[in-house]
Length: 387
Image (cartoon, rainbow, N blue to C red; front, side, top):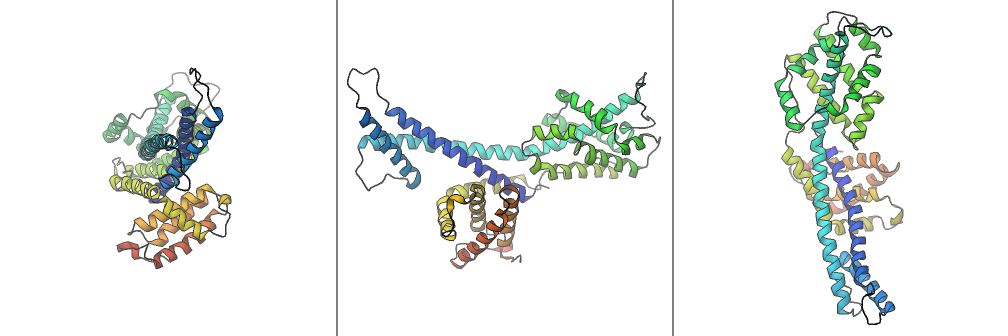
């Protein structure tokens, strides 16, 4: 159920984070150069502060050339000391950027895998609400200020009972450490303030007996209208997942599919993906190719955008287009139109109001040019023309 658009979005997010981290690493390298040219306050010899400042500036300029071109400028003769200082800072910068990039990709993949934990957490919340219903109905002394029907409840719901009886589900909870033990307040507030005030649930509780269809309809209602819409549980879910808006559709789909499996008489847990190894490869390869060929993609984009003020182009748009170019060039089995359409949608959602049209127009024209030059070459399914 994990789709490629979400994976592409993860890559774009990772590249954005990588760009921020790279800039931070560059500033740290500059700090290392600045420290190398601080006056030695313990020295008895006089310190030439103007000379030190000049050497520092030359070293910082040389560092910039090393980052951009991989070698110092040959336009002027630089002192050996300046080159050595810049090279040491550049080595620090290179090591740190490589570590940061690897960490960012690992984090993105971990976030993606954690979507399944969130789905299981929502299923457990349904079961916990069933337990709260049981406590409510078994109270020896009901609250006199609250008149609530107790002919039935979520605890008598056939789907909830199947969830509670599922060994597969119990094993997954234990294996993944899924628990609401630290958030009992959220469970109780959701039950009291969201579920008990829900008119559909109140009507359900007035009946002693329910058909399988009614039980399925009820549990789907609690999932969709209470857990995934009411402020109390929804705020909690959003606070625990910075990318909730990205993950929401997938989590909801997994939960709905799980509940519907109860119609067969046994809970069946859906997989997050048909092939996680392939999905992981796609994320890592797309990220790495975008980084590896960034200068090449920039040259294509600068030629395409020569009549634009590049400083006014949204940073996210540039990242999206570079990622699209990496996919167009290095993933021959993916049709051109599929790739372009996917990145148009990502631009619409994550960048400016005009980004969709901007990305569309430029990628369309650039793809045609690169196909004519033989840079974009498709094979297999990639030859399909999705007009």
